[in-house]
Image 1 (cartoon, rainbow, N blue to C red):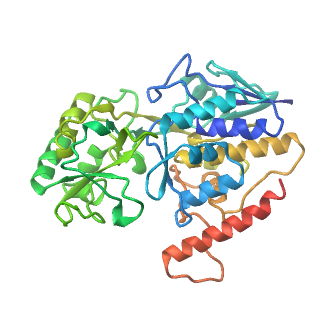
Image 2 (image 1 turned 90 degrees about the vertical axis):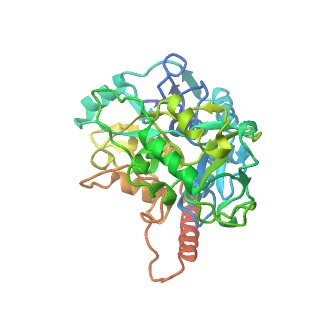
Image 3 (image 1 turned 180 degrees about the horizontal axis):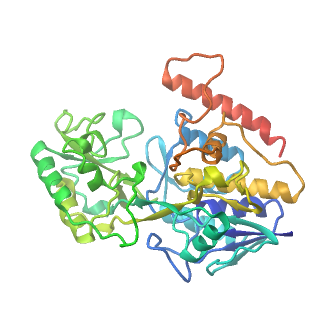
Length: 435
């Protein structure tokens, strides 16, 4: 078996994996096809491109995503370190300057010893060396056909949707106001209120608006966490008031009252010139997005820097196919990481990329697999996606899959989560000594 490792895809999982392998002295051939062939979700040539939101989720230990990021910091994650260096205001969340984040990671990997960048499509899996497939949810047809031949499993897929981005200068701040929900954070979000009449008019046009057509040969499957706003709206007139447009936790400083509906905007770049529409993932045609979203009073003159898009996300049946070290059960030189495993979200992609790389390195160096218990957020996620189950859907970090406290009953949820995080961090610090 050749010592050089092929990593397919320079997204979040692949970039993290390439770094983890290279820093351990293992030669990496990193394949990224964007220079020649972009998917419908990609716009730039940088590695680790954030194709949807610029938020990596909560960044405190009372949040499972925050715990997973802290675990990655302990594992010397390149991507979390760069995220910390390029963060923008987002309350208790870790949001980044989208371009600054990806550009910095690209520069580091291009200049790193032991990494060779191959800018072409990867189509055939060799049998004489280790390969990590981190090609993401938009794996090319040629590679996915190759994977189907190897696994014998039918393709599983769902649709993912991204939210529009508007320029700060085009937002009508006479209508909008800065505030964080429940006073958490420093008021970083721009809140765009609507009266009952304005909301009802908006809702009516939203459910009537024309959606972009899906490919005829593909069945529509929507993952709950990325449900398009028009799809949510179709479940009932009040559905948005308990979802993306919920006013709870916000008091309009201009009226000292809670608004009927509120659209939140979150900073998307380091300079604070761009804001994305929180929860407004959509598959509406671009002209319809402009027409309907401009009905929001604060966005009547909005300049849409990027419209929302919807694209296919592909994932394998990991619960049947993968070992706990993220290798393929039927071909142990082949590993998987990122959203193609069913690990949902940016941080899960980083985590699976990191763990797959560590396990490949350990195998090459004659060491035991590095398997984390489910007391950690990373260990719990990997256990979830690799334990066989009848119905498998993508999963992101959450305390529901982390092992419950043993011998302790803490009724307060916040305190319970903090104690679970403390246990996870203590466990991981001891486990890392074995690396």
